Image (cartoon, rainbow, N blue to C red; front, side, top):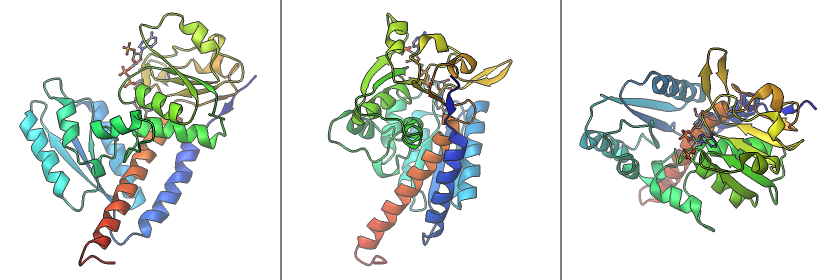
Length: 291
Ligand code: NDP
């Protein structure tokens, strides 16, 4: 079997056109503020691509750079400023933060309505609960869900296995699949019997951070595989999935690069646009507002 490719680049490009039109229809542009503590080169690259995409969409973006030894108070002061800036609709704190900073306290400072990364503890709590709606869903799992939807993968009643339980990918991904009525198993580094669990999965989401970790021989024929991993190897960028063996067994698979990566970025833009639209609506409803 040769799996059908789920082309994240093409899907993100079509969403981009839609977002561009929505941005153009607004009276003033949505604004995204990024905050980076320290000089991690990979983080700089991610931030640059976010700003580039904002410009392409007609959105504003501003960057706040803090030194690697910035104090908790300094970081929180920057967020407090952005929290009250009416030109800023979304605030993105690039993770991970240096170890001396309290990440939870920093993220909790981002107002719920500007939490376009979806990592505010209240948004995460709402995502975990039945019948509650977070203001924003974390971008990578939201992008994976959109890929599944666009690829027409049935979710209700499907057996889904999420490999990885991180706060930014694995855990919210499992929660979203659960909300979509899949039967979800979370697998992690202490799981016993990984192979047996994988072989039952209709949907596999790999978010491990280990190059080529999941192989075709481990999978149920015809399953759908979403590869979140980004691993830099001598052979170039590869996922957590061994693409060549997986494509012979799976029914559908995302490539790396060009799968989940572009979706993460475009979901951030969609969240920022949504934040701006909501803020403009609130302003219109206020006494003396435009409406
Ligand atoms: P983390 O390191 O935070 O989490 C990795 C998870 O994998 C952990 O839950 C860990 O288990 C689990 N794991 C590690 N080894 C094994 C194993 N042998 N068997 C089963 N599970 C294992 O990584 P992230 O979630 O942040 O990222 C995962 C990958 O996704 C990375 O490659 C990252 O670069 C990529 N990524 C891609 C994005 C994109 O836009 N495409 C965005 C974000 C991340 P335990 O909890 O027990 O330690």
